[in-house]
Length: 376
Ligand SMILES: *Cc1c(COP(=O)(O)O)cnc(C)c1O
Image (cartoon, rainbow, N blue to C red; front, side, top):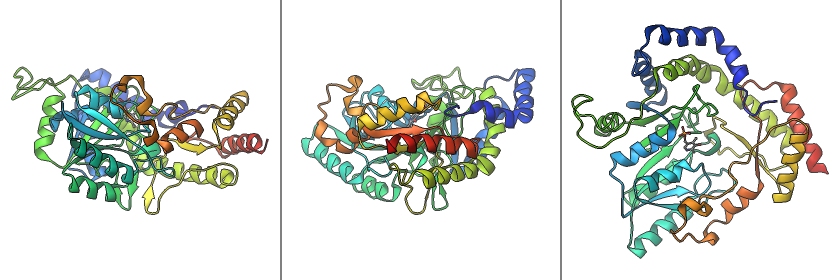
């Protein structure tokens, strides 16, 4: 069994996919081909945003946003403690300071009470200026943007929505990638909408920021790419990857998202009495980047993972180490006592095999094994 079966997905998409890939190779328009612009148009239509600027990966997408806002030395950026390394890495990469924030135990997203307490602490200390909140849509579920927006307005901060795992999610009718002042996603193969390599995108309604993004991602270009008016980076989405995404996107939007709701519902029906199953808030819709359960303690989690492995069932721990404990962020004086929920989750979570092409038999096999182990 595969954790995320991209081979099965390819078999489903093969006829259209092969034609589209071959077309790029035949036309040899590998950089900034028409497919890139087509994809950007489709993604703005879908997310309901004004601008989509594709780039080389989801990490660059986040960093480009901080560059547009001119965030740097002396600035504090608030980031959930339970996320992929990138969400904090980009803050240090522009010489600002990441302030990690504990999460909600049910959704694994940033906890707004802890966030506000830490913003006030930073203001009181007076050393750093609070500038932005990186709100991560973890495992596919959007963060609580209604509350985040109130906090951001109160303290005059930007919201950067990290929807690397959240593309396809929504709150009510409003789609992920439209909640931030700038929002980003990743097309890494295992993400909800993945390409066949690295890729990413940045979304915003702000014309001025969109123009800056287009400049920063092509060496700070001015009127042409040989007129360089600022220091930027080389971060473009390959035409081949855009072609792959054009083949995948309609199937993702029209079929895979629905299939995943059904698979998640089946998992939860089977597992809800045995383990802590995912909680999706009322009115929220997850794109199911991961199906993550929680066990009673580290021994039970590690034991279950080993047991599943013995049965030929892959699983993964997202995330083993809270951000505030990463060696790369040492020296910022984080207080381990500020992160009780993240610390608990890092010891007890386990993500199960999950993808739109799972069969009922596979789901039942995974659930049977989990229940068997937990029962002892
Ligand atoms: C995957 C991921 C990223 C980074 O995306 P890449 O395309 O791999 O650079 C950033 N944030 C989160 C939450 C992610 O899961």
